[in-house]
Image 1 (cartoon, rainbow, N blue to C red):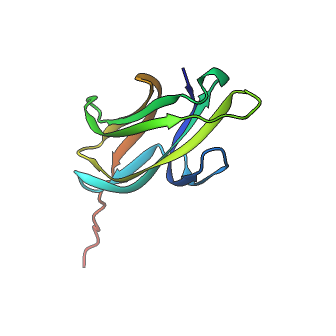
Image 2: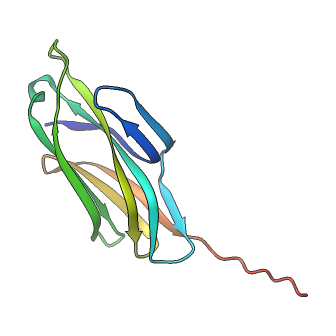
Length: 141
């Protein structure tokens, strides 16, 4: 079964299968807001799928699920990936990015992204959703 070589969240990413990928603000592990619920405008989920030579040419289901602190699903998506490989029958790594637009968070806390390959969880990414304290100006006029 294919495995996840690496996965991370970023502010933005562009990836073309079989080529280099480009990332802005990689390694996102925390987002914050002054009020809840709130919508985060954009994140990118970057995934590198490690495929062995015998798995090349087959379709594999890759799915992600965003969970809230209670383990409830907030968002998710996925699709089928057909892993092409080098002509020399070597193992390969296929990197791709998923744009996540306007993700809604109901409250602060420890959230996580589960990444599943062919129905089996292969990686979990933590995401702390934090509240920003509003500081009041205590100056007396």
